[in-house]
Image (cartoon, rainbow, N blue to C red; front, side, top):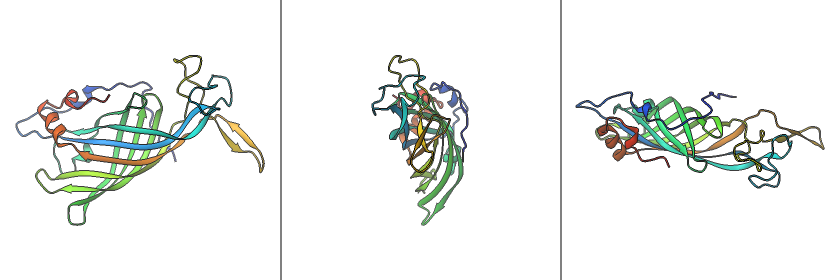
Length: 237
């Protein structure tokens, strides 16, 4: 199953996304810290090093290797304090510090429920994303969390697991040119019972791991008082 949503190939962090609302005498805001701690396949040279033998037109030079650590940090912000405001918090600033890349996150929440003694919660969501270096990806995530019964009554935190796909892996750097990407990272198909057939066709890679969101009270107040300015949120790098 593929749900890859195509975004622009190059993205930058743009504060303008936060200009969708303006402060009022009764204004309120919610800012959630977001973390995706994921693994996927990544292209490397056939020796297993990041750059070795990675040259365009050299089939087999760029091969998929497992357990590439893909960690996304960021914020979701919402310019109100509705009980289920987390479901509307689609303004986001996100990044992958390892790659120094900007990340676009588009959550679609199936539901958030208050459960148990009204201090617990459950959630299920789908996510279309795009990394400015790696490209598009999608995830489905679920987990449990907390509900804050104080005023404002909002969801406090969530954590759980997610699984999906990352668009076709590539080698990040070419040995001969830092400005040119390698071909798609290849893999082997079982051609028959005893042989493998190399392929570098467009096939996405598995993406899986854990996720967490937590209400950031200090950032919420700062975001509100600044007139919903992304510049008042902690820097992404």
